[in-house]
Image (cartoon, rainbow, N blue to C red; front, top):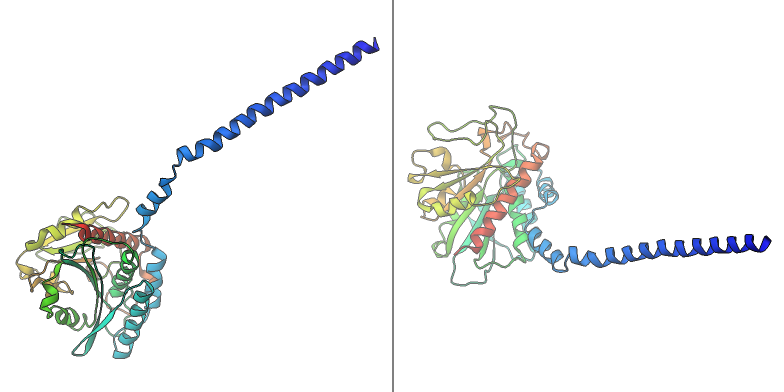
Length: 332
């Protein structure tokens, strides 16, 4: 009897051991299958592809960081000199070789990165860095300067057929003096395909009716709020303006494009920034703006400070300009 009991127990032990090994075997088979399928579902080239996709992705932290660094009135000679020092330092960090271009009472900052095709004309991106008295100018125009510096960072090691030029204009608030001086260099203008000028790109309002429109300008607004970006271009160079129509703005602010006839003669509100001198030299130029005093209550006020920059709109506006810049630099 005892022998039968021991035999029965022995058989049960063997069954348990074999059964447990069988379960472990199936678990072990499933585990290697998962490991082996990882490279198949995430191929080796994909990280490289992802890097390329995100290569021209703006950094909102960097953008806002520039605005914080420029959070001071940039009106006096000493203050504008301090601003230029910051701009030059940042450009050098990104591998550019900026230079100062003096004109009566002011100094522009200019930098250039050569394209891969010497037969093509250059694209210039610009923004003014000065302010009116008593305003730190977070939106007007530290926002434009910040995007320009972000473009410098992103395109420093991003080769394109066309040459990329950057211009930080002085004394825009004194009557577009920096850009007027810039366009006197006719040899440089002959090598230009087009210009994008940013002047206030960081403010949005989300209350119905908060956006105003210039008198006499036929506009079909994309929204009853001030949550869109505006691109203003001359009708003689519509292909440049249409770059903003053709830019993918998925998950980005809407863009209202305004083609202006007769170089703004009938719409003087469209001549208030550094794109205008280029128009009058026959160079296609687009002004990108959040519409300034037609939207923001902080225009030319001491209250134009970093905390009033609308983070998500600003990031979206910067990304739109980066996309348009890339498209123009690759265009035929």
